Length: 338
Ligand SMILES: [Zn+2]
Ligand SMILES: [Zn+2]
Image (cartoon, rainbow, N blue to C red):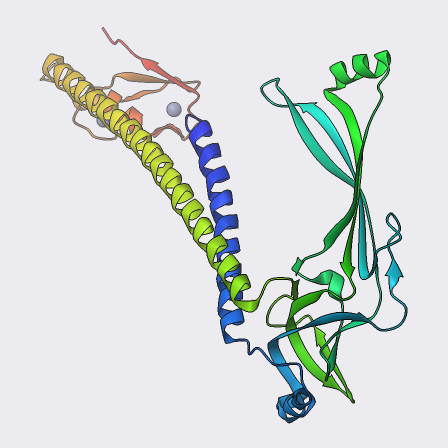
């Protein structure tokens, strides 16, 4: 129980380390995948190129084009002058909450998300690729077209309640994000020829990206995230190493203490036996000798049977049954025969 604090800190640190390593691996995988993914021009030859591939699929490809709705584009709910193909409306609550140390900190909690999507494609003058399942994209760059913060008006009772519950609402924020039609973006995913139509969808190899960044910028961003994650791994690793050495040292000190204690106890015991051996009478008859070792005199009485049959040394080894009558040994006591 002495290592509870260190053990707890170590397990939290290892957990964070594990999460960091997982993130790092996923960034690294993304960088490698993106480096290998071919950037295909959106032109007349694209269909022929994809058609010639195995299963008429390019497992992970990069294309760039203009967002073009298939049908009538959606109108933004909050700012109707804007049209787009994807729409995400978020309602979040701003509040201040009392933290561990008793300080009030500001928090933002997402209360509700609603999203809409409609079929769309990335187009150039010559060709188009339909984007499937766009809302599942790992990177999805949307424009914020509406952002409104409404402070709450709190009554006296709300303040009193907030003081006791530790949470006080400050206001509500509504945002609307839209992927506008006509914006020029980069899409990364599995490119598949489905009948006569080209589609880009989430790939089994890696996540879907829909971003305003170019392929090289995207790679650079992941590289940067990867390096910063590596730094965090080093920091967490160093903390773990320190904690492990602290625990190791404490264990070593504890073991050493136990060993020293045992050694002292054994030395004392040895000394005691020697002293006793010296004080034993030398000329004993057979009846007076311990029935087990037949060397030392009988020194111990066994209860409840009452036999006086063993020396002190033997009585330390035989603890279950009396060697004379096989009765159970409940207690032993020094016997003085005068
Ligand atoms: Zn004995
Ligand atoms: Zn007995």
